[in-house]
Image (spheres, rainbow, N blue to C red):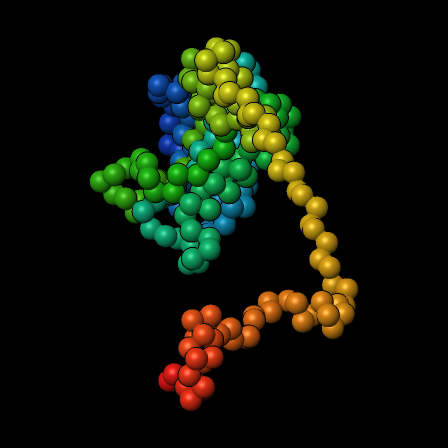
Length: 232
């Protein structure tokens, strides 16, 4: 691929802007930004004419290979976008996505793209000069099959297809809940609210107040009439 780029006259102007190297992920092609030949408009995700030209030649090479690709955007350590809501993270992700859209417009199959990410300034190309414009770049990796398999294994499943496996061991099954008998409610006894007669009312909780004179006292009174007064 590197030889094809060197021999292609369309790449001669960008020979210092393209780095091809092997990586654990696969064949890495880094398209480096330059103040003389910038790939994007300043503080923007819009491709320049030079950026479109180099990506157009790049997609020809990618289409000749069967590998799926990963596209990553990078920036220098300077926050070149003065906005809290549009940091280098957003810009690098959007620039990587701009490259993806350009590839699609130039007839690269959509399913060839495995991932598109923005890394801001977390992976500097030139750590000794973190603010160098060479740290601004778009990285295209032709993924190895082994790495692609690992990537797919670590991709979280959509929430709507996540299921809980059913237990196969009977011991793992929760015991069935026994039905609980509902208490039988007794009908309330009817209260006799009917009005009562005077005779019935007088018999309710009636306390006798009649005083009975003992027989011994009666005999004493009969013998001694003067002792008619009751003892205190």
